[in-house]
Amino acid sequence: MKAPLLSVSDLGKAFGGLQAVAGLSFEVPAGCVYSVIGPNGAGKTTLLNLLTGIYRPDRGRIRLAGQDLTGQPTHRFAAAGLARTFQNLQVFFNMSALDNVMTGRHLRERCALLPALLHLPSLARAEARCRAQAIELMQRVGLQAWLDADADAMPYGALKRLEIARALASEPLLLLLDEPAAGLNATEARDIDVLIRELAAAGTTVVLVEHNMRLVMEVSDHVLVLDRGRKLAEGRPDEVARDPRVVEAYLGAEGPAATAATEAAHA
Amino acid sequence: MRAAANVSERGATVAAAPPRRPGAARRGGLVALALVIVLLPLGFPNAYFYEIAILVALNAIVCVGLNLLIGYAGQISLGHAGFYGLGAYGSVVLAAQHGWPVWASMPAAVLAVGALAFVVGRPTLRLKGHYLAMATLGLGVIVSIVLTNEDRITGGPDGMAVPPLALFGRVLQGEPLWYAITGAALWLAVWLALNLVESPVGRALRALHGSEIAAETVGVDSTRWKLRVFVISALFAAAAGALTAHYAGFVTPGKASFLHSVELVIMVVFGGMASIYGAVVGAAVLTLLPQLLTALKDYEMMVFGAVLIATMIFFPRGIVPTLARLAARARRRGDAR
Image 1 (cartoon, rainbow over the protein chains, first blue to last red):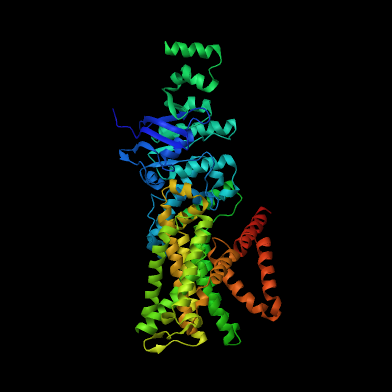
Image 2 (tube, rainbow over the protein chains, first blue to last red; image 1 turned 120 degrees about the horizontal axis):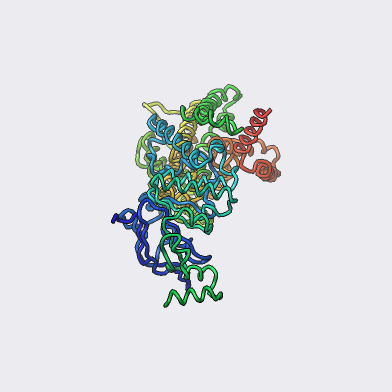
């Protein structure tokens, strides 16, 4: 078996008395679409922020492609091959759409002071290349109509795609998508669905945090269910969907069917 | 350039917006600035106009640097007059008391200020917003107090005389010559700043302003780039300070005061955040305005304040960005017709 791309062991993070993520361990193999689901307050967003170094874990380890990143600043996670999008958009609204995507290539471009200050010809050539690649990416995520737009003039659905294009621009090993379908209408959500499949087919490993169950069930190879910061279940989408503990966490244990299912599971 | 042409072809079929051609705009701007600097003295009736123009150029150099920090990277500094004053005094003290030739004391002082900005910036730039403003304000105040009180070295509140700048045994003096020097320095400052903002470095800086978290997630080391742009802006301020001292022949601690720091920030915001030419325009207008208003005597500050308020209401992004936006809109309307 291949070594996992991302491996998380015994990860924990508390805010005051609240254990947002409690002793979580899982592994994401390379080349799959790995979804994280759970009811509100399950710790999904905290987990994503831990996985990108925005929060520092209280305990546990995070390894990406064999590199221990625990406690490192966010830009080190990026350098190790991780890119993400945000549920609440974090677009650079002070730039054009194209500049947003070009900024995504920060780690792929030589970003040194002196050549920049002196406007060396080699830099101009690299910029032209970077620009062409950014244009290609925008077309790939379906933003060809916004190539000349300023980010602050774009509608919500386009901004969601813009974040994906920016994340892809860094040529990441692992792409974290934080609720890419949230706030989108059915057609737009279906487009995101197609996009995620294309990314996976092209070899990018995707970790998807999503509320839209249809999307999760259609695109995922593997699903991890969180509840109150702990792992409730994991497995193939169809296995997880049938898991009585998952049904209980989402619907509550009041119903007789759920109770019966729980008893069956315990028996 | 080829990529830019590419965009416009595709853009033309799908979007009404005019294509962006950063290369052409950049060359045009630099040529226009050079022409203004060269042709302006033709309209100067006397030496007083040169003096004002030199003052504008010197302030503009500081503002171009400060705009990199405030307008592009989104970090505030209320202490840049401190760097300006230290650049001035540093060069003067080296030249007057340690016998350095001025052509060496100026760059030495500027580099020393850069080193100081690096040391001070490391802990300070971890702060954000109001806290960063407080910390840089503190820095400026300390510099101002030291320059005023260490009278054995600095001459105290009365200031001190400055050895003139000499090159190849010839003393550089006279308003037209200093106009040429400061004009060239301003053009150089604008060129360097434009180069910086139209590069991956410029994008990283604007990213910090747009969303620091997102900047970090695309790999921008926010601490490092904030520190670098802080040092660069301090170097611009110190260079202008050193030039000012050797042009004026006299330095006083007033140039390092908190009030001057605030004036510099106002110039940047007035001219336009994240606009290099905005910094130049802001420095020019706010340096000229008090000269024009002196006729009003007691009402000078009142009218000055009213002009500031009116500008911020009618040009909320600052003069240059607001005008650029209006021009772009007019052009688009013209295309649509």
